[in-house]
Image 1 (cartoon, rainbow, N blue to C red):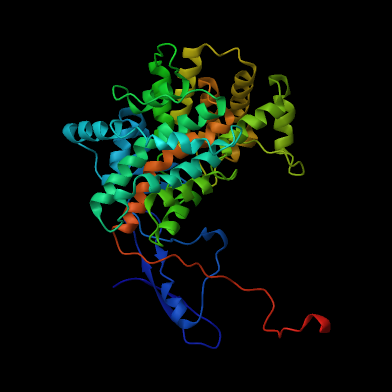
Image 2: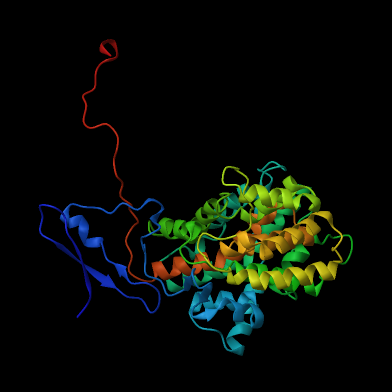
Length: 427
């Protein structure tokens, strides 16, 4: 017999609510029937509300667990690559050798964008924020690729997914090149996903550009570790936009807009800003003391996580990658990076941080890696958006291919009750 929760409201008969169980994680109380009883639930930020059913990603924040389709992120980061994780998120299973080769080929041969998009960029100021440009150009893809916008057609949805994953790094690199006034670099089909991105970012037509394999591996991992993170703000935005029947390019553009917020995708940028504020490794102790003072507004950025109450499982992998990149580039003497490493050392050893489990998170290390690679701070969130695209698309497709209804959150109204309009001369 299915379990039920009983809601008792003074002066009314009890209301029985079904309790639903997933394959893992806490059970949830189905409150959808409350509307018929004349009630809504009140949950600011939806922090206690399951807005959908999903089989893509599972997080246990207390235990520090992140699973994509059941596979631990640590195993994927160690043994897989970004495009294989994309396939997994989209299709539910890991590909065999033939499927992987075909998927990789398809993505690499869809990386070019419509030539008229080059002209589209000219409508933006050179000093525009890259995320502002990304929102515009990704949303505009629906005007260039309108042959795959029938969301009821499974083939159309798949073509749109391939195009978005393939073209995001091309568009990201174009944003960077446009800000510098440098020529756009066309993608190369002989390079891997991460290699191609680095080539388009840092290459130029005047001379050959050889991608460092250590940097390419680090970039691939950054994309992979950001590929999906369950029902976060941007993913929920994509689902909400998608519930209206909007095309996938518009939905992903809405996710990029949500990601732009400093409380979401801007965290690794905030880490570098904090390091600039501290200024020098000799001042780390001073700022650690400020972070411990509850009356001081200063906070250490890149430490702790809203979801993970234990060590962020992505941070372990990112720390290893960070060490590899700094060693490869010989940046141990860089003042800001030395400062970051000193801050990491204190946070991992100081009882205050250890007891509160305020460990360095994925944003702390990814910010350091991206700076070391040479990616400017205002491009950090663009990197996040590029990596998160397969997760957004997987959630959008999961919703569209199943049963869904348009999202319509309720509210607790606290405005004026009914009042009659008075002409201006009588007010």
